[in-house]
Every structure is written in C-alpha cells, then in structure tokens.
Length: 276
Image (cartoon, one colour):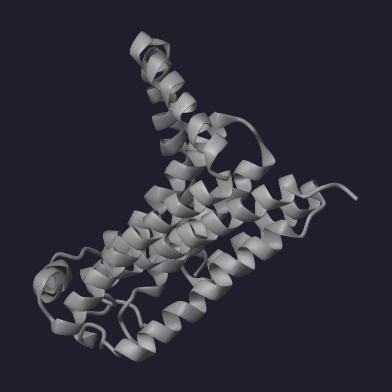
C-alpha cells in the first residue's frame, strides 16, 4: 500500500514537472506569436467585436448563449457514446478486443504503475486533495466559495454518475480480465469522470492563489495529462471498456462546463450588484 502511494506521488511529481517543462518550452513560440502584427490585429479586432456585441446585448446573455452552445455540444457527445453503448454498436465494437489485448500484454511493472495511477482518480485521493486545496484557498481568500465550488463539482457529479450507472446497468468486463476489484456497473467510468472534474477543480483552485500565468498553464496541462492517464489505466486494469472511459470524460466535461458557466454568471451578477 505504501509503495503504491509513493509511486502515485511520483507520478504526480513527474506530471507537474513535465507540464512545467512543456509550458517553458512553449514560451518562446507564444512570445513570438504574440508579437506578430497579424496576431495583434486579430486580438484588436476580436476585442472590438466583443465590445460592440456587449454594448448592444447584455454580457450575461452573451455568456449564457455561448455557454449553452458548449454544454449542448458536450452533452451531445455523451449522448452519442451512450447510444452506442445501449445499442452495442459503433465505437463499442472495439471494447472487448481492446480489453482482451491489453490483458494479454500486461507486465508486472506496468501493472503496478497503472494501479498507482488509477488510485489517483479514486474517491479517497480526490477527496483528500480537494479538502486540502479547499482549506488552503478558503483560508487565503477568507471565503466559503472554494467549498461550495468543490461540493457542486465533485459532490453532485458523484450522484449523476451513480444515477446513470443504475439506469444503464452495463456489466463490467469479465473477472478474468480484471486486475483490481471494482464494484457497481461499468458505464460511465466514475474514475474517468471524477478525475477529469477533480483535477480540473484542483487546477481551478490553484489559479485562485496566484496570477502567474505559468503556474496556471502548468496546473491545467498537468490536470489534463492526469485525466488521460487515469482513464487509460481503467481500461488497462480491465475494469472498464474504452467506451466507458469516453463516456466518463464526456460527462465530466459537460458538468464542468455547466459549473463554469453558472459560476461566471454568478460572478457577473455579483459584480454589477449595487453596494449597500
């Protein structure tokens, strides 16, 4: 158990260092593009168009329209995956072959690594990380906002995932293909959805602590990489099909978009509310 925890912490460290390296490597290119005449012109025209739009339509309405379009698009992707799972066609044709192929090509070392990675997306790990992050950010900002944000993102998501699992009732891959024990139904992958939202929440909270754009980019890239690794680990360990993971990611992105839009609307209303 201790070895798995240490290995998991090592994975987190590698992800953060790799993300920071990527951000630093991209700085020259980003600086070069930002200094180009066409980039500055595009930015200027974009700002002018946005100002023209918000001058004629309330900014909150613009945000709601754009946000609704994003949520609808992401929800449509989830529905497409769900439909394929229910009908057992389309992308689900690769589910069993993929799980079986991975089961035949496992190695002891890689399996230990995958178990450590999948533990990073467990309810225990995400809850502990969220509690620490919420406590630090809440104390620094002297606000209950981080706690409410965490409860809405991770807490409500668990209920949504559980409800969908019970309704769909998809069985997991056969026990001989499973390396670890997993209870409940298979679709959508709770680990995949929770890790996506949970890691995004942690990156979001980190961004509340600093205005350093390098830290922001590092946090979000590390969160995205961690999400992908956790999802892939579920298939490798034989407890989920690829479509379960895709469904979990689509559901997590949809819920994250809902929270992001709702949060931004609330912030806009708070900013325009007259002071007492």
